[in-house]
Length: 123
Image (cartoon, rainbow, N blue to C red; front, side, top):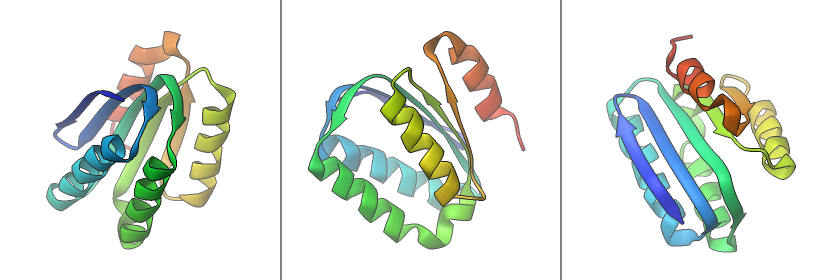
């Protein structure tokens, strides 16, 4: 479930909990597309601290977003992920390897302010 989703200037902030389904992830996809239309560089702060799982539909929406934006991946600047779950940490590490021009970092929940400072400072 999406607890909060906001676009402020070129920063998308998202906080999720429980299970994220296709409709939830469609909201995120729509916001990413909107941000890319209006900003040259976009960063993301994702609080996944209370995420349990993604449904297959959410994974499908994320895959569609990635394919659609293959030519725009250089428009992403930084992605900060807040989590203490190893599977999400590993996923972020894989994402960083797949997106070589995007700086991806994982922070634990005690580092929330540090993550926000990092993601909002220009490269």
